[in-house]
Length: 292
Image 1 (spheres, rainbow, N blue to C red):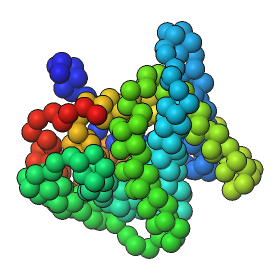
Image 2 (cartoon, rainbow, N blue to C red):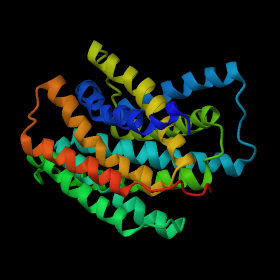
Image 3 (cartoon, rainbow, N blue to C red):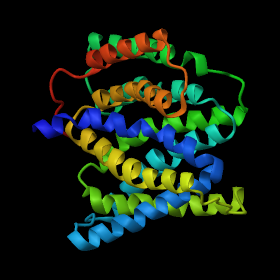
């Protein structure tokens, strides 16, 4: 692995952590599904241009295309939709982060059953320790006083990101990421258009500078940058090791919120962040997993 590639896990965590920040900027100005529809459509259009210019190869079979579509509906459609709907229905960001933060454990269970990935005792201990650290980071923002549908949406998001990343690794890892992005985001836009027309009929968007920033950041930094890094990491590492990186997202988001929104950051949270760093180090595999 090159020196630049060695920095990809940290860069992925940094970029992915801005997702809640972008949502906080954008959701006051557009319904959640409409926000995501615009995001998906813009990414698909942008990547279509890129593929045309560089002449990136397309999948060789309809089966590969369908695997890309299913992975996209889970990773982008179900996960992002679930989180955005939960936040729009009043769920605290800390509660959503805690519930979705169960993803590393769920992914490890699924990867062990699906891929036969070996998880040693040190990694299990790291995953459990990560949950402790996660709770310390988000404890003051955790609340069960939310719309029951927000919890349903968050549960769907958890399943979507867990199953979707594994589906991507198993069935769509060899598709060119540029043409794959066109297929995946176009498929998500096609999925969301009827949902928006049914559930958010007015299609009202308040195009403020804040919303333009949020949608631009979501398209370029999150949908192109962070997702590309996630797929690269899945191609080159064990699913359990990649999943453990998600424990780092709430602490990094908390630090960003402290500087951007003057949100609380106390000694217990900082201790939780330190615990998570140790936990992720414990949960990472000691040697590269065989490629599938």
